Image (cartoon, rainbow, N blue to C red; front, side, top):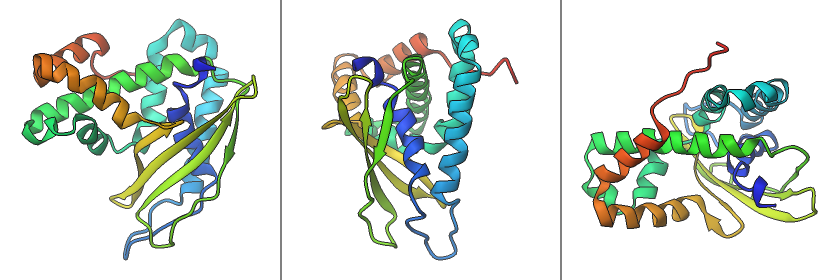
Length: 214
């Protein structure tokens, strides 16, 4: 079961959009309907994963590039980075926040990308969304059913950013992604400082990726 948990945040964040109607529109703001955005994203993601699975196994960089192209735009990376850094974000410079956000993005892409290979026969059940029509911050709830029959609850917290719905946090079971990473990084920042953490992440996960198939 654990093999399938890591990719759920990336996949369910896109899948959640497929089953959700347009929940809110600010005045003079007409975001792309989540159903339309989600359907396009999920179809492209799953089609490419199926068609290029052998290629991705031989060339992980191509998989990472596909995830960056299809899933990263659905994430409010700046807000998520600030939440993950917590109190350390208050004293960080704009450059440090930007470098951390880019390194954090690459970490997520590679972590979830490597786990996506194991996502195959799982099923997803979406729960009704309980939010007012003028909501600008909503939570999607879903249950992922594994091949073994285990039911894993998944939540995705989203808000409107420049007329686009973006994910800023989520959870699998009762564990928040932001809280989990904040705990990991907080100890490292206290021990060696934010710059040391960023440099460590940059060394391990590198910079941007490009799709050689493009």
